[in-house]
Amino acid sequence: MIFDFPTSCSRDVVETITILAGLACFVIADITNSTEVRVELHNIVKAFPSLPVQPILLRGTPEFVSKRHLEHSPWLLPSFEYESLEHLLANLEKSVVAPAEAKVRELRRTG
Image (cartoon, rainbow, N blue to C red; front, side, top):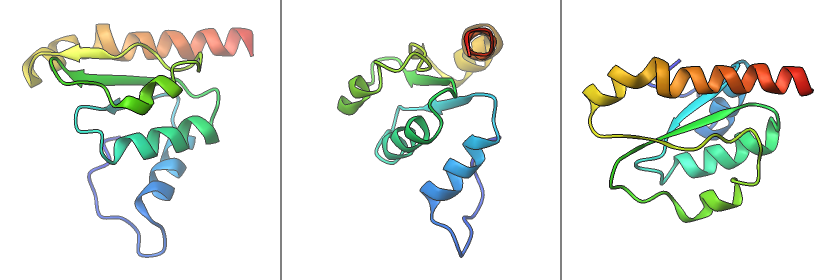
């Protein structure tokens, strides 16, 4: 699910995203413009410590500074760097979705 719809009047954006993440098998988060995403990621990792998170990032864009605080989490996958939207879409299944699904299976085996 791409979070691209108006938020609820009764819930703020972070709360809505946290609820949606709780329904997912894994989360793909574009951290290219991470001003808001970093807060949401920290909340998701804190609320769901076994939910795999696959960051994606436009190549040449620095990762947000506080991401290193999340990197001790075994469910946080290495960031996939894409060169363009076309490059991301061409590699989405193999380089983004497949590693996230593999992490789900790994966590289920060890959990």
